[in-house]
Amino acid sequence: MSAELFNLLDEIEEEKGISKDVVLDALESALISAYKKNFGAVEDINVKFSDDGDIRIFARKEVVEEVEDRETQISLEDAQKIKGDYKAGDVAEFEVTPDSFGRIAAQTARQVVFQRIREAEREKMVDEYSDRENSIASAIVRKIERRNVMLEIDGAESVLMPNEQVKHDNYRVGERYKVFVVEVADSIKGVHLVVSRSHPGLVRCLFELEVPEIAQGIIEFKGISREAGSRSKIAVASTMDNVDPVGTCIGPKGMRVQNVIDELRGEKIDIIRYSDDPAEYVSNALSPADVVSIEVFPENKMCKVVVPESQLSLAIGKEGQNVRLAARLTGWKIDLSSIPDNEIKKGDKTLEAAFEQLGNELLT
Image 1 (cartoon, helix red, strand yellow):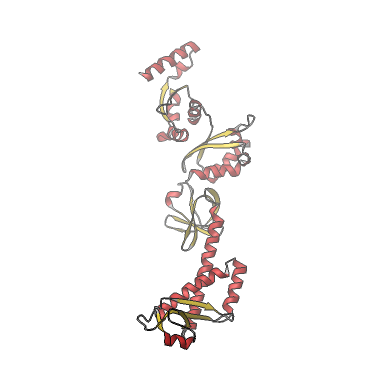
Image 2 (image 1 turned 90 degrees about the vertical axis):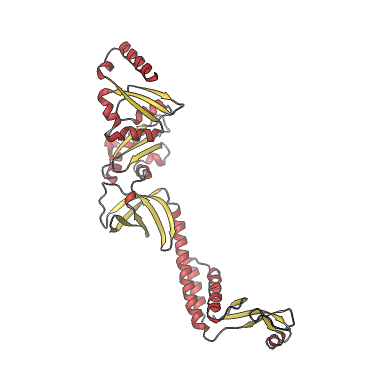
């Protein structure tokens, strides 16, 4: 070995921030293993690096009058040939570097240095990307293998699995998509980002990009329920009385919500006003259907909701989607029923009587 190794370690420390001492410690362990593998299993081995770059191997053995174990002991006579003042009970240290060890040492050093560089770069990338979990990222499609979409995100690789895709996406190589980073994982090949296009978090992050009032803390997200590729419901609230949370998220001429819809390839989005009152919250969540009356049962966390007969199918939604998403969003079970439209249009007294009669029927 030559001083070139130490010059290289100095350059690596300066350019990549990898401590020279850390690499030398790893190299020492690797050289000891290489020596034992190729030249015998001496138990106590020490590696020394000289100033001129040479690597030397030293064995340490107990000095004894009579040798019983040659791997751990050396006779007093042989020890005194190395150093005259050794006496029984001392630990003698002597060089055992084989003539052919230089080639093995060079190869081992190269492997250790490159492995440590790869590990350090991987650790650096993990640290760099770790704060991106539960956030949005811009990804470029690099390859499509069967139904798996290979993505690149700022130099890191990722695979968009079929169960994380949405049905309206038609992926093409070179196209850019917004994805939700579910997890940052450290793999053998480097940093791997677990991403999704179907995660509800993607909807939240897209609105955060479009609605600056969210970053300012004026608008708050209170809940999201999503059936990816079809429909999402989001509940929002305002921390300022003079700011309409729904209108703010919709944006001028609907541009803010439309940008989110476009990124989600046409997925419908219902933006509803959050309320601490369960009846009002559930009523809002059933939008676009109108609610005639609602009765809350806190002990079962259930609501019995009455809607106009003409809007019952709208409240239920296609294949039950609307009421299902509303229930997920609010966390309340929803029992839907209807009242004929012509009864709703009657006078107040008749309407109140109809509601009272319907309420009694629901309770019996």
